[in-house]
Structure formats: structure tokens, C-alpha cells
Length: 121
Figure (cartoon, rainbow, N blue to C red):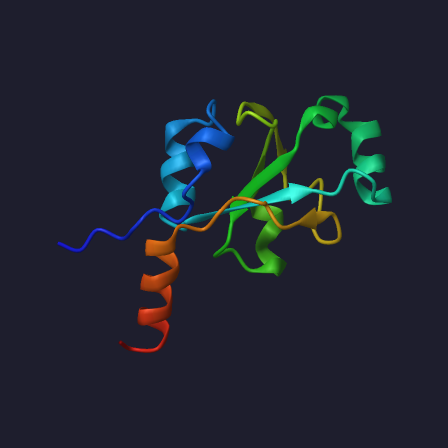
């Protein structure tokens, strides 16, 4: 059985308090992680409604749910160590316009396997 390589080489050291199930789901590329742009108006308005979200640095979400179906998703907001800050329903927020790259290092093994898979090598 082929075991895919971990996606991120530094996930454990950057987010040491991340729940194991979230870590495994990110490493297998089942879930997506992005950094939150806290300076955008959209985030500022959200923080007024949900004060605990101010301590969030990243958001974790499904990469396989279509944009029009995000109202059925729950987004996991985590702090800079990986601790869950809050969960927010897609009915209450649209993430578009307030996300940035996550800044985590993609492992060389993952990048090579992705390239090989994409190009049929």
C-alpha cells in the first residue's frame, strides 16, 4: 500500500498544539490551512461579532467543498500554536477576501510526488 508523504515539513514545530486529527488531515491534504489577514475590513467586522476570533491566526477548512456549498461547512480557527480558538459555520461567514498563504513549508517529498502524479511520471 502506497503511503503518501506528509504535505508540510514544519507543521509539528510551527503548530505544536494542533489536534492530531487536524494535523493528519492537513498532512494528507484532505483539509486546507490558510493564514488570516487580520487587517482586512471583513475580519474586523467578524471580530466585532465573535470576539474570541481575534486570537486566531489560521483557519482550517475543506478544500473539496465547493464555494456555493460553504454554508454547510464549519471552519476551525486556530491560534499561532495550533490550539482551537473557535468554530464558525459557513452560514455565518464567507472566508473569501480575508485569507493569505499559510507560510508552512511544503515537504520536498510531497512536492516531488505531486509533480510526478500531475505529469504521470
